Image (cartoon, rainbow over all chains, first blue to last red; front, side, top):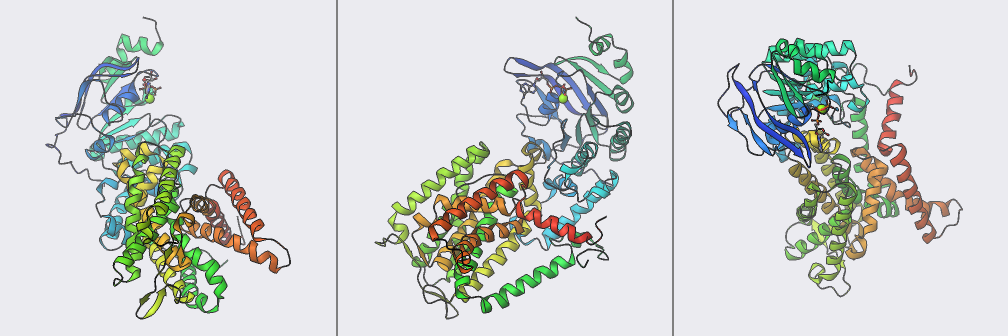
Length: 270
Length: 359
Ligand SMILES: Nc1ncnc2c1ncn2[C@@H]1O[C@H](COP(=O)(O)OP(=O)(O)OP(=O)(O)O)[C@@H](O)[C@H]1O
Ligand SMILES: [Mg+2]
């Protein structure tokens, strides 16, 4: 199906090696410390969950990874290259795609066009060809449309292909947003609460898609999720944040048994 | 009953991606074009050609231009008339300096001058949005208007301060200037409009159009799809101003035949073009034509149509009523139907598709 083409920016990374390394990252907003000295890594091919209570700094962490925020301290190394200030579009061209906690679709566009935007970086025909929409430009458009149709089939959203996404129910919007990220054929997929606000059936579908993406295409996934059952089922390793600090890191079983994690989730005062 | 897509199966993506996927729409478009080229110039009175068709065609290019910027990219501009003026003066200077080059080429090339000016005034759009951007483009409008009056080089030091459109020919037939016939001017305008509409609809349906709409709908996510916001916005300014520039050149050379651009390309026209975009439908090519048609036809209908059916109305009153109607309609549509007349047209088509059995 979708084939993941390794980006040529650095040496290809084998499964199981470190794809992304977060070292001692701290992020402040004025006086608010959103992230304090957090380190963890994401290995190629794994599903890495990031969990923690509300306001723990999970979304901020993703924002650092894809360049919306610049941490004041610490470094992020991606594919063996320590990054300076990365802009979001640079993160995108290095193979990082993402979905948002509050759906960030292009509301005025159809499902198809939304997912087609995932292919933008791979479309190369210049302005004049675009004006003519003919020959190479049309061939390119058709080639990418075929990939997008495969994403649409994969996510089982054929029926809403031409619907403006603003009119879709929330659960389907989340699915389209996943489709848009998948269409970019990312190496690292960041999912910010992909199942929030879904009913059980929709959640099961979404779990299945995430697992399939990971297993069939070998895409590395960083997953923020509040539903512990989902996290324990899907993820290979879990990092737990609380008040911007890392309080635990390991396999789901280890993390589940960790006293600090239990306290954090039960809200025990320190 | 007859307007539906039953039985029209698309067997490849090229057909499905076509701008008019339904066959009846394509036939309709062909009929409209045939009518516009073969019938209108021969049956329409000179009065209608002069007061409705020519300004409608010239302005619709500017409305498409602003629609690209405002409707597709979500950036408001009040400088459209200024950019039209840049096109008009550029064309005037070019054809006086190089009279041997055909005027049609200069009309097209003058768009590039407007595009350059538009990009310059579009630079703030990376930092500011919405109302603030509107104010910044308003500054562009006033600056340009000032330049049109204060730099006599632009109008070749004419004592009247106006552009006087010279006679220019194509294959020996006069196409601009006082001796050119209205029919010829109309056909030339029409060719520009058809060609530029085709280019614009190709653009908005492809990669570039999608990146514009992405920037409009959610700029954060657009950046994450790899879109460079500055590039996308400046390209929208460039294309939009290009269209305005060509429109301005058409407006002066083929419709007015001479103009004091300081007064023609004033802020009032900028507003009218913006209202045309809103009334016609932001983010719709058909809407651009509906909007342009509306703002051009309404004054004429009130001024000449009402007296013809026996309602006495003075020109000045009509003028005021026009502004009131356009203002009221703009506000109404902004609140009730942000996609304007084009959306209403679409709903009617949708009804027609399932008629007579809507369930
Ligand atoms: N742009 C910002 N400006 C100021 N403070 C911010 C900003 N973004 C996040 N914060 C603060 O940083 C802290 C961490 O927020 P973040 O959104 O990362 O939490 P989260 O773990 O994703 O929570 P949730 O589970 O509610 O999504 C919060 O205290 C929040 O108020
Ligand atoms: Mg969050």
